[in-house]
Image (cartoon, rainbow, N blue to C red):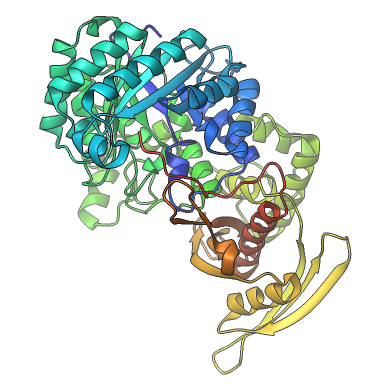
Length: 548
């Protein structure tokens, strides 16, 4: 695809590389909703998945291509988002990727093959000549199906630059339109990576005919710095993820690159098509759905990113915000405005406010469910904020298929008593089930009672509670991860004959932290049970990790 020299294309791989983060399980509905938000955000290219990895991944990419691919409303570029599918350098993968993305008005095949001697010798077990031959065949076949073809030499950061020139020249000759240079293992420094991009652009035959892209990992904490070095050296596409999620230590964070370009125009003099006011909402959605909590000191979107506690800083902020803030929170979609809604507000006003917040694709029954939760919350809180509403939406609407439903819980605990919980649940047969249990604390007691009813053993691997807003009446968000016990806890990868562990995340929200914790636990359990029972739109993350 053609690109303005003054514009950096944003290639988001949250739904592919980001979902390969351990535990970042997403079902089809969640992936479609994230893709919709990425479109609102203004992402140029969405790598929706790795279609050949599983039937669930293929279905998710296909639905995104059909439902999200045509969307243009609110996009600064005025054009639909390109929907891309990843494929290894073979015909079966490439055909599968094309079948998944072809329904989108603008679609792309992204194929890759390792080029470092380490990967050629120990992983692929081929020589350089065979590598070049595979690249030519793969790109040629991809171009026969699709006009927009991206090629990535995996582990380019540790590849011989002169061999890269040879491989990339052949990829261009075979029809590649974008060349992506990945620092797959986060090995390079900004100086090295910037030099590499400049060297490849200067020496690769046909370099002027393609868009040069960079894809950096954060193993040494240098992903954003390396990406910006690549941009300075002439790259005009950056491959990023929301919140920087991804393999191992993660990928370059979209919000960091976009805000660096926006905040430092005198340094870069480059633009993007991103609506930065959608960044915070997108970050929260991805965090909620993946179960990956954003660290408080995370740049741009962390809870402390715009917080000032030191007296000197507070004094400076009161005198002028530029003393300690290089960006305003409003530019990334954070604000302190309150919802002008309360317990007397009507459903119509609630719907209008949801649309203003970007939730314009909700069905009537979803709005009704969220409105009921809102009214209950308004009775408990003096002030209901947009953040509270987002927590309600995430907890009420975007949950896995309901197999077990929580109807009522009651706990008893104290410093001189044994925590006890009774739970009333509605089962998949519509019947009510009730049981009670003891625990080491109130949350543990609730989980033990739920386990007695559901009868499915598992292991809790992660548990966290965060307050959405301030004050004693704050809405609490609970995020957990569980693993099945026994043989269900893993699958054997047929290529490596090694186990790949299954994890399921859950999310819950309430002004009561015990209730929020119970909802999160049941959310994860329902995902696990749905996958076990073969529901079509839920899949676990038990597949070969693919790094490009």
